[in-house]
Image (tube, rainbow, N blue to C red; front, top):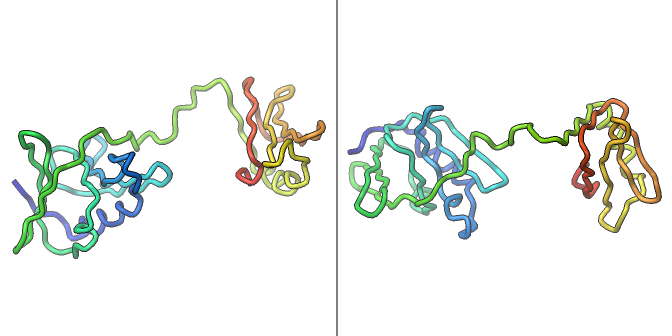
Length: 193
């Protein structure tokens, strides 16, 4: 059974495909997720680095993952009917127009929980860098001697204060920032700035 959708539906699917993965090893992420759930209906594209979630109104009873398709990129927005149905072997997605019908097998698998991209803050280690300290770091960090050829610096805590350590005992104390925990975080300064 198919039902009408808004003209923006196709545009939103095409936008979401721009954020979908091209890595065939992550097949679920190569498609666009049409979600129907408690939090509403969304068209979602994600490649593991970028995420696009667009609110949508779709007459779908179940969520499905549309596979990547050149046809969807060529499609011009106009009056369409959409629907999903379960076959014997899989779920199918269907688009109807006056002169043609496009039907494809939905991708099998579970789409990642895109609603919870940032994990809960239940860890023992916590670093909060104040805005004033960020501007100070932007000026001082390039002059701090690196621990190796990759420009590594270590964020750690000393007496509850956040400290950035470089080579040969050089360090910068961030007076307005907070540190809690026991972890030391070493990273390339170029990625931090």
